[in-house]
Amino acid sequence: MAHFKHTYIFIVILAICLLSACEKETLDHSKLVVEGWIDAGKHPIVMLHTSYSLDFANDPKDTTLIDVLADHLALFGKVVLFDGKDSVILTGRMDTNYLPPCIYTTTKIRGEIGKTYTLHAYYKDDVATSTTEIPTIATFDSIRTTQYNAKMNVIGYANHLEIGEPYILMAKTTQQKQYKICPMGAFRATHSQMPITINNPIDFTGKGVLLQTLFPKTDSVGIVIKFAKVGEAEFQMWDSYIAQNMTQGIFFMETHSNIISNIKNGNGYWCGMGASEYTIYLNKDSLYIY
Image (tube, rainbow, N blue to C red; front, side, top):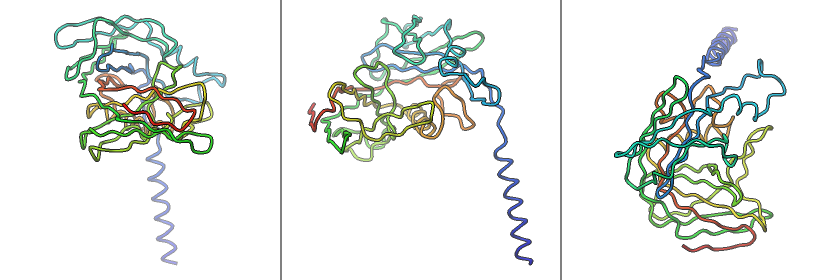
């Protein structure tokens, strides 16, 4: 009887602790969100919007992703980029190739390896800032595609990795403009020579997150792989984003466990990338040598 009593007390205490831990955290849903990157040799791309948290109790049942984007898009913001010498105001324009479909960019700045870029984003009364540096460029020596049932396994081979340094992998189809991070696409090099599995990017749908490890075989559409070396703060962001995205939601939706950000006075990321890009096709077993 005494044993049963002690067990009952333990269960009650555990239940109270769990209920306390599950109390809804008070979140600031009006934060400015910055999503931006600058690659070596390319112009910067920045997108601005405000944060959104799912509220099924108060949101209308017919609320769609398009409705959310329309309500939280920062259309009349201002983005200024400082490259250590000059400050340039980025031009905002609509571009439906991206999500959100509005970008800020400029042809006056092109990313340089080893250079630091400081971003200032303004929207209404908010001012968000961040600094990033473009590291050395990551490269593959070859990429192999191998058919497995009706899908294709893709592996990249790199021979010049810096041990312990952070890297990311992204992919898109040749018909798309915006990359998506691959599952397990943020990693540290454990060896200078490594085979690296390139997974099909995470796809968010209205029914949840579908994790498809292999690429579907196709005769018509190629994929473009982006392999990049990034800084430590940027790596932490992408690593936490992957963990979050594989379990719940999409980037601009705040959750009770926030994604790590390198944006001051805001959410999101500003990421310098030492990136290389590779276009391959998934219609047969192939070896691409670079």
